[in-house]
Length: 100
Image (tube, rainbow, N blue to C red; front, side, top):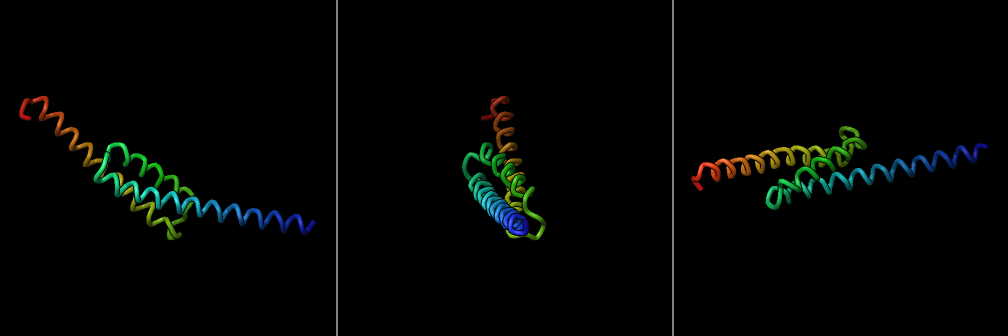
């Protein structure tokens, strides 16, 4: 009986470690996507970065390794997405007014 409890505890610890590692990888991927999205196709890449950052933050506690990357990715993502949307809006307005 004790051996079964011990095995379950070890299994849970392994699952928790794998979950945290996956969340750290998601945070890293989100940060990379956020930075790349600033320069290339941000209107498409930034929502992905924001989504991945939020998913990573679900699994990472504040102060835990990887949480800062997830926070940074979400902030960069929102700022870059806003800038890309503004640029698109300005282009539409200029095109509609015939100034361009």
